[in-house]
Length: 224
Image 1 (cartoon, helix red, strand yellow):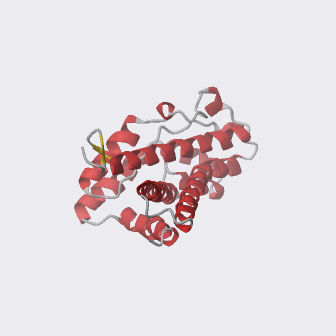
Image 2 (tube, one colour):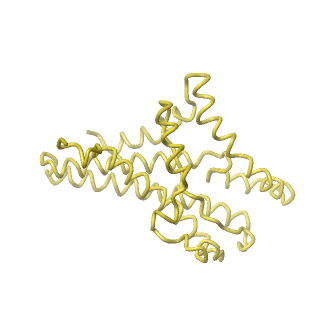
Image 3 (cartoon, helix red, strand yellow):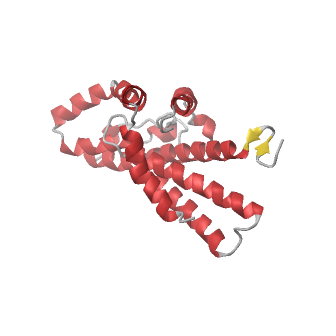
């Protein structure tokens, strides 16, 4: 075991896994928290406002999908078990959908900015040359990068991603009901965009988008 391993596991991998799980857990809790504040007790009644990762980990979205994307050489994404909510509780259906949907990306933005702030404080205070401080900066970098990636990825207006909540603002009542009925079939389309398109075209449109958004934002906040 060398200085960059922990019981044979690379420390970088451990840091990234911890950052990823914490980012998706807080993302989902934020959805449930806002929905609860808007009058929907569904997430709270099912114990999904907890920060306990076990309550949120989805075997496919949290483990299998990121591994598939990693092995495929594409951008690595994943998700936690979606927090349940019932839009019928919202006094204003469309605004409730929007606020609940955007709560997750907003939480990721805040966490990413906190990570960048901590890293720059450590650098500004002159602790960077030490080994411990270097690991803090590295952890903050990955924490910020992963949160920004999740934020921009989820802002894509593609069901079932959070950005699709914006669509509800522009639909009639009848169209909105139809939209809800087809959302359940949207995940295979997203998987095609994430896996099949890059495999066939040897280029990832979503990866390019993430690098142009989350990548540039991370590089801007970590001028190292």
